[in-house]
Amino acid sequence: MAPLDLRIADLVTFLAVQRTRSITGAARELRVTPSQVSKSISRVERHCDAKLFVRGTKGVSLNDAGVHVAGHVAAAIASIEATRRPAPTATGDKKIELTVAGPSYLLEALLPSIAHSHPRLRVRALELSPPLIRAYITENSFDVALVPGDVTSRPSTWTSDQVGFLHKSLFGSPSLARRLAPLPTTLEKLREVPWVAPAATGNRLAPITDDCPIPVAERVVGHEAQTIRTALDLAATGEYLVFGPHVAARKLVQAGSIVEISVQGWAISEPLFLLCNGEAVLARVREGVVRAVREALSDT
Image (tube, rainbow, N blue to C red; front, side, top):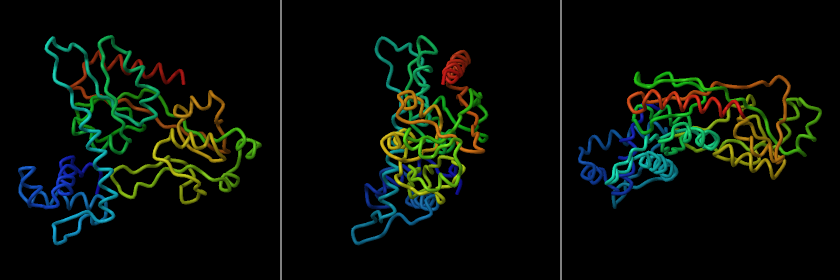
C-alpha cells in the first residue's frame, strides 16, 4: 500500500482502539460507526503488512507487532498535534507563523536562517522524515517543508523551489581514515569495516534509508541509529563508517572528530527542494525563505 493511502484519521482510530480495547468503544469515542473503525484498522494493518490486534475475553489488545507499531503511531500523531497554532492573544499576535517540516539535520542547519528571513516571522519546527512529509503533505500539517528530492504528487496549491544540492559522502574517525588509506579507498576495504546503519523500524510508517551505494545487507553493521546525527556521534567515538549528507556532518568535521573518506567512483548528490503551501504563506515570505536557505546552503 502506498504511504499516501494511509490517513491520519486511521492512526487516530488505531490509538483509540488501543486505548478502549474495543471496536465499538472506539467508534463511540470517535463518533463513527464500528464498520468505519474496522476499515481504518484494516488499512493500518495492510500498510504495516501485519496483524496488530488479537481478540480476548476482555476485548481486543495489541499483539507484539502492534506494540511495536503503536510507539511510532503515537509519535507521528504527537508531532502532528504539535503543529496546532495557539489562540491569538488579547492584544493580537501580529507575528507571521510558519510550521517548517524536515529531517532533524536540515532543521538544525537551516531553521535559524529561515527564522531570520523576515523580521516578524515565528517558526515552529516539525521533525519529519522525507517519507512522512510526502505522506502527509495533503493534510496541511505544516506550511513549509525541506525535502531531499522533489514531491511530485503535492497539491496544486503548493510551490516547489530547488534551493540547492545535498552532497553525500562517507565519514569516519581520523584513525579509521588512516586505516583505509590511500584515499580514495576501495569498495573491498569498506566491506571489512563495521558501519552505523539506519535503524530498522519494523514497519512501513516511516522507512529509513541512507541511500548509500552499498546496501545495508552487504555491510558489516556495528550499530544502528534512527538519525544521521546520532550515527555520526557514534562514528566519532569508534571505528565505524557512516554515509550521509555533508551538512549533517559539518560541525563534527570542523571539530576534527570525523573526516570525509573519499571512495573511488563516488560523487553523490541530490537536489534539495523547499515546498511551500501557497494558501498559507505569502509570496514575499516564501521568496525570503527561499533566498535565506540558498544563502545558508552556499556557506556549507
